[in-house]
Image (cartoon, rainbow, N blue to C red; front, side, top):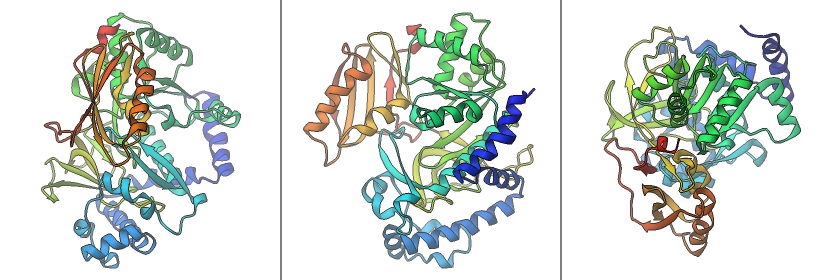
Length: 458
């Protein structure tokens, strides 16, 4: 039952905050919550209208897309269906690395865009831009999807998260004040985990009593294993758990739901595009955030068809500051061609081969999230195009590195300085330079591979 403070945060603080920052988030949220129940045909028409507007904008305002469209013989003004963009070449991570500045729209000044970056689950760092309006529409979409779990604006939440920078950590007085009055969340840093840290998480959650957890899938699974191993009966139980950032398998879901006594809602997203798709209470698949994104599933250069796995290709319909058109995110999924019992017209999908990151362990008994290292370590390593970390023994790791033209002495010094900071001075490491890192059988790169069960550290 919501408290008086919950209502105060939702109906007073939330709209006043939006007015103060001129974000329009309440209006955007209302639009998202209305459009999710449109028919599938009307949602596709909405996508087509937004796609055509984006394509024309990209052609007129970015050198990258003008050259790309001209070379492909593509005229954006002739876009008649969503399938028409099939002639546009796929946008790769290498394209973004090399051409970021000419992908930026020339009619968006520095005060109209926000820089961002991702390490990527493939270990391939990306730097990119979002326009200010897209920052707010992403926030509104996230609220829409969060509310599917039964949580509501103003209620408490806990983030078991491997990268605090994703969450805009409250450091200023203003941000801390906002967190007390509106966001009402705690962030439990799972980038490095010990048994003592998990015990501290348990105490913090009992004291804070959040309504919902939002977590890296592997992090909350490891926490659930810890509570089960400790035979804990007095831990906090939220009303729901949202898992993201890593692939959630059936056994992990079953254990998490058993330990915490609530439903798990899986989510698929990325730093580049925010929430891509989320489960609703029917759990029949992941609903695509179709008002903001157009998703293709491609196999051998052609549409894969319903229920058939293909490479996930994303067009962000709302980021005009730096358009992402036919972006190959390097995940594998499939369209689900059925209506959801929840009544939403948003199309369904599922992940067929998503991001896989193992935990790594340190000689001093800490457990390091592979997913967090993509942001904290690899994204900041100069001259690294792609990387993979392998661990066979507790005191030794091997870093496979694909170098680019900027790799040099500074890069070697970076690893010499940073490896002990992340793994402790007892960790030995070798750098192995390779031309490429092979794919898993799922068609996905695996950033970190460990042969050591992290639960052995409990």
